[in-house]
Amino acid sequence: MHPILALQMVNRHTKTIDARLQNACPAHEARALRQERTYLYELKHRASSVLLTLGWLRPFGANGGLLYVEGAAPYGTQQFHLPAQRFPAHVDRAATGRDAPFPADATSGRWASPRTVDQGVAALTRIIARGNVG
Image (tube, rainbow, N blue to C red; front, side):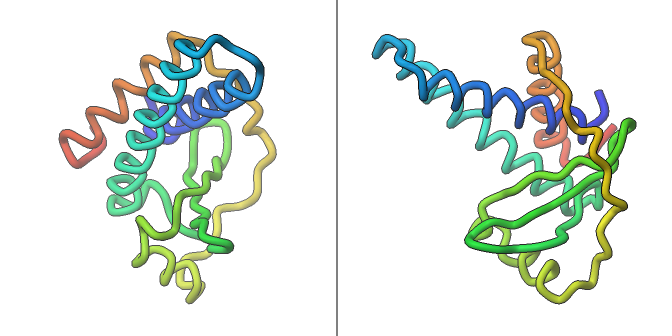
């Protein structure tokens, strides 16, 4: 799976979990969903760190404690936000404008099925473990 697509699948699934948590659900389900969300956000942040280092992602802005990054995927540019405090060097890069953004693309509206989420998790785990894409 393409690394940016993997990141997108995991990111979309965390948003689905957020939506489920906002609805009334049993306490045991809410606890499990919060644990899954925490794990997936940590996975996203660690994989993003590797992808930023390798140049698959690049910062294009920072605001309000968030770092905005983007990466080219097979169907267009994908943008993500990350907690700025975890990526201070990249916040500095975004602030100086040394990296020009990818062209804007509005084709990011994709739905993540459980299978693609599992594939995304596996792909991001490999990226973190190997420290590279491939």
